[in-house]
Length: 71
Image (cartoon, rainbow, N blue to C red; front, side, top):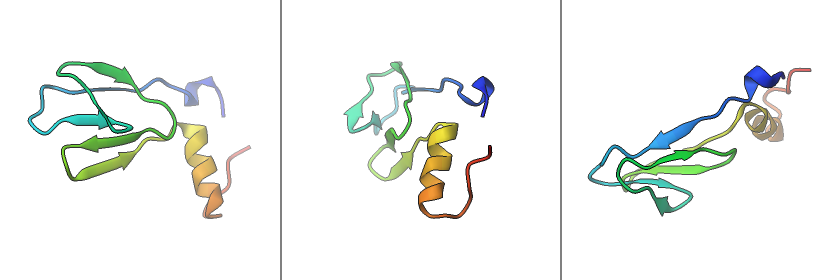
């Protein structure tokens, strides 16, 4: 991996009716928050996502031995 693989990602609630949550904490309308490796994201009451940065994603997958981290 190189520095290009480690980009910053942000999530913003655009005044949604059902809310946007990071790790169980609701974002205020128009609030922009940086995502960190392994953050849980929930959009409203049903949609749940897990955020991984590049290295964290390969670490997660390697637990299941599906793929190995590139050297």
